[in-house]
Length: 104
Figure 1 (cartoon, helix red, strand yellow):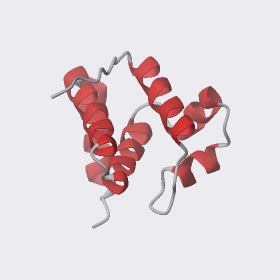
Figure 2 (figure 1 turned 120 degrees about the horizontal axis):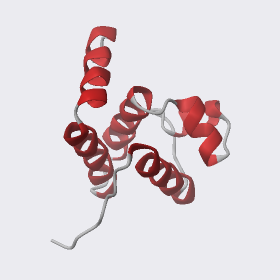
Figure 3 (figure 1 turned 180 degrees about the vertical axis):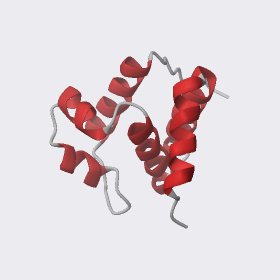
């Protein structure tokens, strides 16, 4: 099911106002990727990027064309690990969020 514009605007407003929600959304995206749910993880990352830094600004920071970045995180995208980790690093820097991996 596609997200409506109103829902995306609601998420953006909450991300702008709630640092804990912003950190949780980025953390959830990375956890999904680590658990092997690439499709959902990429989808959450796309939502996070659209609601925060934006693809154009992120593309400049990771030195990659915005269209390539969008394709990489799109439903049919298959990101290389170096590109994906560079994106995550830049998202952490731009949002002031520091994620850490812990053994469970």
